Length: 295
Length: 225
Image 1 (tube, rainbow over the protein chains, first blue to last red):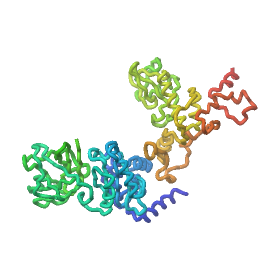
Image 2: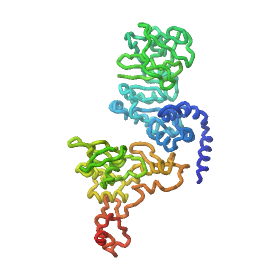
Image 3: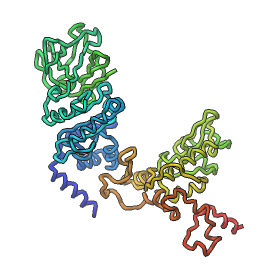
Image 4: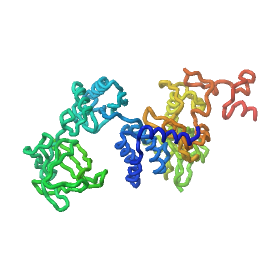
């Protein structure tokens, strides 16, 4: 077999699978200048296609000028990268120490029994793929199961069937996805005043009220207090992509900026959450980046 | 120039020289497995361990990757070093007993037992083939894949690599597959054949099909004088 035929074979296969590689180029361009951009590139490709297609890795190798072997080594090293297509619904169970002592293994066994597959496999109908991870960093909420990006905390064996059923139905908001929604009780990091308003509900939970300033306009903004939800209500329309300045409505001091968003480089404001910890959220409208730091 | 002492012998070396190079300059032999001239230091096999520092606060470092420091005191043959080195060889024997290179090391260091669960791997993950492919052949056809227990060496997607020129350099440098120990029985970790059988040159007729690997061969040395 000559090298030429190998390449030909790959192109044929990707074409047969109907995968368009048009979006790989812009992803590579976006992260090319960053140091350690390879992980970001692979992460974005994985987010776009659900896995790392072989032609995409060949493209990354060609454009970055690294041998394919190096890219492949990185892609196989990290558990969050997958080289095979995953199921439509991705279920990820935490087997970290804290989740383990709270019976995560039983949850995994139950998931395996219900789905009829082993961890790391995909159901033959391509609906579900099951994986285990060693820690999701939400140890206080264990055992944790992530279904399609939604975190289910304190999962019980009896609730596994329910969880899978709701994951199969999809459902946009965290609340619709079954298990109890993870509601944040936010307060101002300066004056410690509580920010939720019981009079205004977003997704059936009290909204978090802040003052917002954007493009010369000022007014109130209400954020959903359900973690993972991105629903907001505001006094004036905030166009997607614009950066908002947040203020505490009680002490009228701008929320402290903890860092820059690694996704879009906008400021990341932080709120304090009751029970200890910080809730960092990107100030750009439409940017999905938010992060919980529990202390 | 950096001055240090190796086994009590003072020596001055250029900055950036590794302890292994300095010791070799003095003629002090340090066994190595994953080290190869012309390839970047890797420090994977830990065979070249030496003891640095002043007692009682000494530590073991791999000499192939440790750069010489001013005033460093290095011991290459202390009891601690030899004990650690014997353990390393035992672990290598547990992984890959059919390797002639490892069996020779075991014979040379007087290893008489192997106390770990016996495996029969084809690879000790020393990374020599990966480095020779990337650094000398400028190809980068093979590399490490996956991690931990599942770590293997091979081509991406297990397909024939387009950049591989079939030069064979990876097999040439491999300590595990270049020479097979022909004597060892599958259930016995330690061959010891070369150390225990009288050299073929002295007991001619008995072992016609046996190659002599003795280096230096005692019989030949005696015959020379």
